Length: 378
Image 1 (cartoon, rainbow, N blue to C red):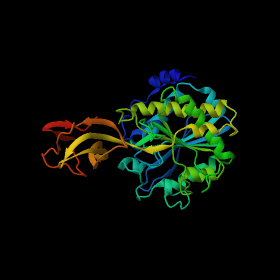
Image 2 (cartoon, rainbow, N blue to C red):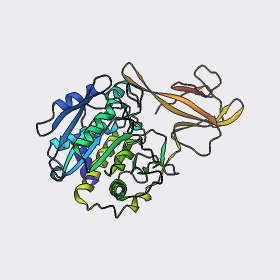
Image 3 (tube, rainbow, N blue to C red):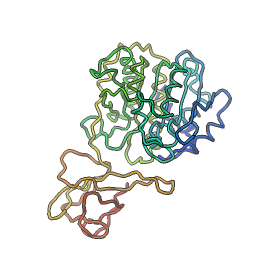
Image 4 (cartoon, one colour):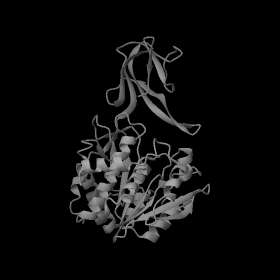
């Protein structure tokens, strides 16, 4: 199986009814209803606002894999990739995986957060900090599913912001991975080593598509995080983080990379003898740094001084449509950060759309550079 093969498959199997970053239960429920009979669909619980939480089970192999997506409601890229993968399974591809594995997927753990496009659930709780308290119904649903299914592996599917670089480089972290820690000392036991070995295999496979654009997430221990909690229960757990790529703010290219990476993980489990012996390549993946902004206006004349203006997009849901609103985060002399878009001011004056002095906190799609209107959007 090559990257070229997976690109061909994804082009044919991409679920075109899902597009962009705003994906809610209303978008995926009709797709779940249309799944064929060999896909076992269940309502395994309900959210704070009484929305259905589904699971989908496919395959009949002895190795059991549990995946969940949209634990954070505004992290939808992996959900899109899951439905692309389900289409590939429907079209009878990757049968070797389904003969070897039984896969249970929770495509949207936090439907209330998805509808509101927020990281939190309807009680303003981060479900990924509720693994011990189990204060929320969604947290209990996931744990009950885990206990009943007894997975051999877990894929914890998330999305990350545009700020991350793959190491201290000008390479954006398009995908990131983590084998969560099992204690404060970050010891490498056999469970964690197995997850590391799978991630190293995924990274090796994906370098053709994303050379030097894969990062390793910080492994600071937090028992309240679900990944750490399941790893502590001796289930190798892999955190996937779908990040940014070029101008792909809708993350349609990134969903393809995520699809490839999920399959690469499944193929590693299916075809490799994974005992955790070959975990050291995991540490060849550079650790993520927060070195990117969405836009930097370089060498701007601000209040008589030459500075750089760093801008980050604020993601706001307005009338059920996701908007990316540029906001000036800092005005300072920058020597350390990179941008997804550079605007060269060439020592000319930069002002607001009202021709006022530019300031931190300014939100608008435009600025004036020497009285020429410039868009901050990509």
